[in-house]
Image 1 (spheres, helix red, strand yellow):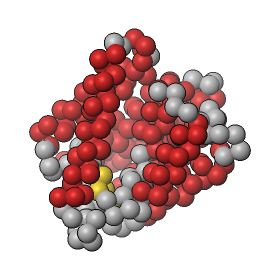
Image 2 (cartoon, rainbow, N blue to C red):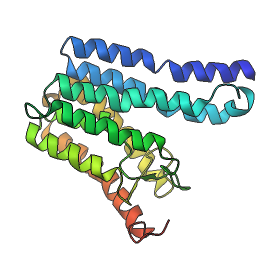
Image 3 (cartoon, rainbow, N blue to C red):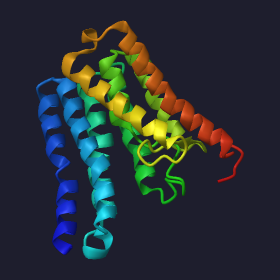
Image 4 (spheres, rainbow, N blue to C red):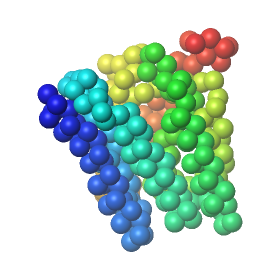
Amino acid sequence: MKFRAFLVHVFTASGLIPMMLAVDAIWRDEARLALIWLGVAMLIDGLDGPLARRFAVHEHAPDIDGAILDHVIDFTGYCFLPALMVYHFALVPAGWAIAATSFMLMTALYTFANRQAKTEEYDFRGFPALWNVVVFYMVMFDSDPQLNLMVILFLGVMTFAPVRFIHPLRVVALRRLTVPLLVVWTVMVFGYLGLGREAFPPAANIVFWLLSFYFLILSAWRSWSLRIIGGKK
């Protein structure tokens, strides 16, 4: 069991491999390829948690703090490399790159350091620093740099807002619907990145945006229904 637990930690650490491949892609100005590799890292992150719980890693490998290991890797893939992409690919107006990326990283630090970042129902309190997903939309839909800057400012502020963002894999509400929709959304993301958005019919874009808004609407509904905005947990 100790060996299995150690292998789970190795699997978690292996998320750094696609991240380094993402760095290589950024250096070669291949934004979509970089996002593909960040997506692979995100898939590894989605699997290591269930594996850690399945093999009781915290009991059989107590000398290694899996939470810290996971946080270090997640901050790299979810925050630092997306910020690097914002800087390298000039996704914000000229002269704003350092300020915007610093703001992204500093607000993200609060998410990772906040002991109350997740609720008992596995919602996130505030924007959960999913900057890799945000940068995907910026790159894939070629959004205006001014709009990108406003989105970064808004989401950075939302890190501290008393609202909930669902954890799409561990969500409690509408789980039987949400998880399959997440699978469809993920497949479409890799399809867009691999083939290009132009390879899909207009109807596919509508479906993709509906899926995207579904997760936001579910988060808003969770915030309202549980009266987080009113100050209750």
